[in-house]
Length: 180
Image (cartoon, rainbow, N blue to C red):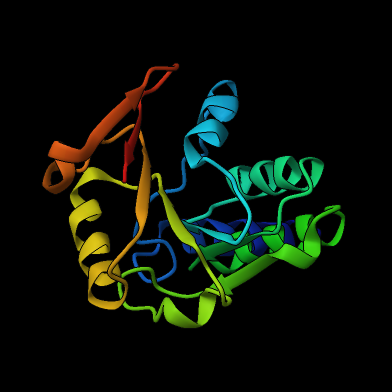
């Protein structure tokens, strides 16, 4: 009986991570060694909203929120994820975070979601963090551009071809591309 329950739970988790509906983009966390450089690339400041589309386990959002808290910044952080298992992990991590009041977790599809309700007013700047497959970058940016006219992008590992003329690169274990 115990084997059957264990097998069922493992099968359900595998299904959630391999299903195109629950996880259209495979889960690969950002490299911890690059965290300081990614946080620097986000250029944290007051009245800024940082949105991590495809937040995974939240390594970027939680580290950036910790840095903002230490620097006494009024910065909002939004973790968007479609995988219910990762959403659960995000909520659990948020409970114990010192800056939890500035962290919002959203279960949604980054390709279709309405971004406007995620940004509190006044927002002086919006920064979108992306660590997604390169073939999904333009589709994601198209959704953002449809809704928001002014924003910056930090893309981990993959350059954004349509923003090449605005590109700045930080070298780490993997490259970090900044577009303003």
